[in-house]
Length: 366
Image (cartoon, rainbow, N blue to C red; front, side):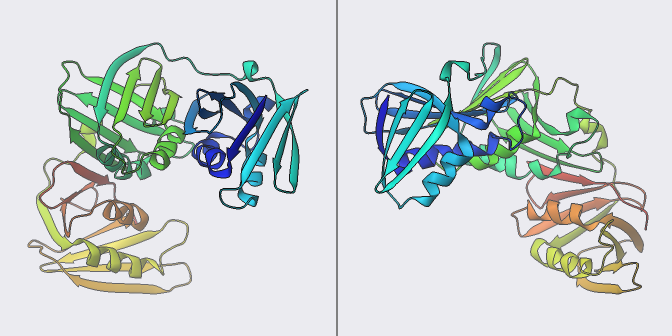
């Protein structure tokens, strides 16, 4: 097999799939990327047996064939070459020889037929939506997923189709993020799938603002998301997601209206002297005013005051400041509304005038 192409025709799809390849693999072939060439198109596939990502680009060749080679070594080679540099690849006798100008690289290969591809045959639901809409759902929620929690369902995101709404929910047990989108075509049945954290993070890189629609196909054990020339297939987390509606505060009797950017700046300044491990911060509320206070074990203290729209009794409540900042960072409206009741109850944070997203943060004792 002999293949002639330009650097970008190999580099761009390689950059799209490289994130799936783990540095330590139990199967040597999973360190490789599958390269398939057919009908003037080059397709690269990477997999870790849970998430599989495919990306394609046009190739000025009539060659047909396939092989696998080290994903990271190929990436390093492509990055080292000049932009639009020509690359010639010859595959024979278990080796792939790459030539570009005066450079030559010989890589070991493994048979393409041994590469473990994921089948997708159990589709239950087929949803289509615009890329900007899906990207918004992911970006406004993914940060609340847990990292290596013993409860597997927290290490992922709930994707829920409920009538005319597509909803994404993420929680790590201390906070919750929810964002929903109205679908053009409603569905009769309610469907829930839990996508693993790695799949969600790869999707946040894959989804752009292009015009190509997102094709979301959900099954019982797998999901496949197709966007233009890219396709991600993932196993689902086999578990029941907790009833997130129960943790959303519904009867809060106190409300704060504040400028989003000013509140972020106030919290960020106060957090400079917070405990580096626990990141605790106290919010002291009084009519028309919010004071953010942070202390650390070195007996240092930060205090920052801002004006807010608050009418009610004085109240002091503690939080992990990172959780508040993450929620505020996901809000793109100028004003934010915070609903709360007492120092021991969770708060509900929402962009003012927008009920499509919400954030719940549990308090902490300081």
